Amino acid sequence: MTKKIKSAASLQKEIAGQARNDGAKHTFLKWNDYIDGKDKSVVSLSEGYSLEQLGHYSFYSDIYELLFYLCILIYSKIVKRTVKMKTDILVIGTGLAGAIAAIIAADNNQKVTIITKTDDVISGSTATAQGGIIYRGINDSKEKLISDITVAGAGHCWLPAVLQLADLGKKLVDELLIERFGINFDSDEQMVNEGQGRKHYAPTKPQLNDCRGVLHMPIDNSINHSDLHLTAEGAHSVRRIIYSKDSTGLTIQKAVIDKLQNHKNIEILTNNIAIDLLTLSHHSKSSLDIYKEPACFGAIIFDSKTNKTFPIFAKKTILATGGLGQIFLHTTNPPEATGDGIALASRAGARLINLEYIQFHPTSFYRKNQKRFLISEAVRGEGGILIDKNGNEFMSRFHSQGNLAPRDVVARSIQNVMLETSAACVYLDISFKGEDWLKARFPTIYDYCLDAGINIAEEPIPVVPAAHYSCGGIGVDLNGRTSLRRLYAVGEISCTGVHGANRLASSSLLEALVWGYLAGKDASIPKEDDEYFPEINDWISETEPMDAALLAQDWTSIRNTMWNYVGLIRTKQRLHRAKKMLRELQLEIEQFYKKAKLSREIIELRNGIETAITVTNATLESPVSRGTHFIES
Image (cartoon, rainbow, N blue to C red; front, side, top):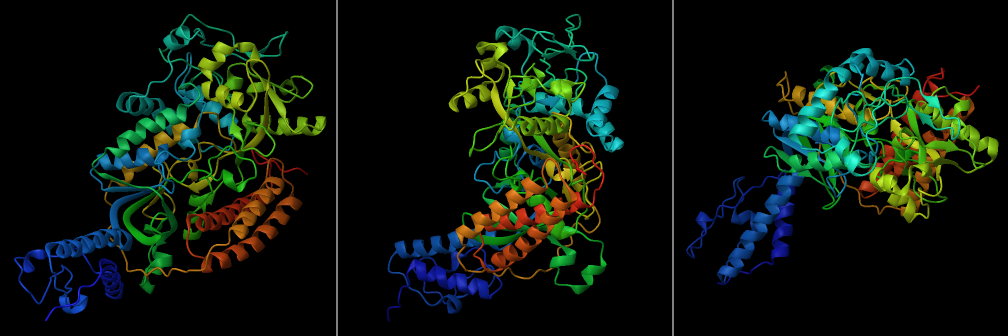
């Protein structure tokens, strides 16, 4: 009697249902029991499925047999990924800090899984970093760097962290970025060939040029410290920044990602966003685990391509999710900087510190109703002058270092001048440098402005402050360890204590390199209970369609509230109003989140409101103005 043949679709549906009912048990079909045309009663699966479970099938030809095999094989591979994964080290974020941590851990024979929520592995703020990375200048020293960092940080920096950065920074730039990854930073020879000349400056007090108001450092051509060209940036006492044109971060990230993608011990998952960290306190099915030291054992992940939700169990987890600029109306950060890591850590119970210190970059390109674009501090480092709408230089009124004052001072000064002159922006003038020089030194900025109708060789650049960098974050030690066991944080999402109340220009890439390296090494060392993975409850998916209008309006509310009430200049009244408005909005968003069909957008919104409230609370609890945190009486 001929047996009915089921379609591949119906077969897959039936197998999927059986797999779910049986706790997602599945692996590979053993075909040795169903070959040579034999009518076996059992087709064995490694988890014990039989023909009685799957239905009885007969195949009229090898084609049907092949289709059946492919259906089982493809499904098993999909479910193998979406139902459960296990790795030695899970890294969340593929910026410089996360990528370095992953590579170093993989070098130490760890199986590393690194995820990014974007489609491209090159994502986050690293790729948009223009200025450069701290190196070692002429007549420079560790002591001078330490002094510059702590002065810029308003005396709020953690000295052991600053000392570590000064000790290891140049060494790791040499050994990793230049030697291992082969990054070609701009050299003196390139500058001469491109008509920019050699410009090494001694660490003396800036002088004000009588005719133009340009801040210059006296030239010292007597010492050839390095073949790398050194530039200056705000609050640095010497020229110690090395760079790759005005796309330093992208140049670095491309080289590092190339190594990441070709490492045998690293698996990269794109379009994957973490929903929550897995912790003993919140996710273990054993009630007794609440008595253990709080620990993280992985994360719940959502794959936005397949719409699947699954846990990744990890011995160690490293958060490297980047910034939070998208909670503000104006930001230089990329779209993915929605504060995910702060929200994940907050819900997991990790210690968060210094979140009131949000750095607003003084100079982002201004066009009404247009996304902000960073105009690097290196433009001012090369002599650029800030002027008001009437063409008057103004920074010498506010700080002895003038246009090279610390970022928080420059940003507030710009806002004050905008209020004084009733202007929508101020201007940054570097037109006196000449077109060829500008094209060679700042090709990205030159092209962007030209596309927007501004030729920076002929006219000044319209600029306004914008949220740029979070000096605070998840509190970590000198190895990147957080207050939760088995959880690390590196990069902008962390707070090492280096930046204090205001970050020194071009220090963030160096911090990412140093702490990424150290966290990768430390996470590779076996520790007690690394192998403990408790049972967790299954994820329950909802099906209500997402309301795009609600999503857009909620983000608008968050960004406007944060910009107007928790922005450059704050008052107690504004902060209390922000807290009340954000709390009410969070209740609405949580209800929205619980019912909606899961997506990257709804996860980011949930993270955004959590981060906004966390920043606002930290700001309210800090009554003293310091660095980037300015309370107006």
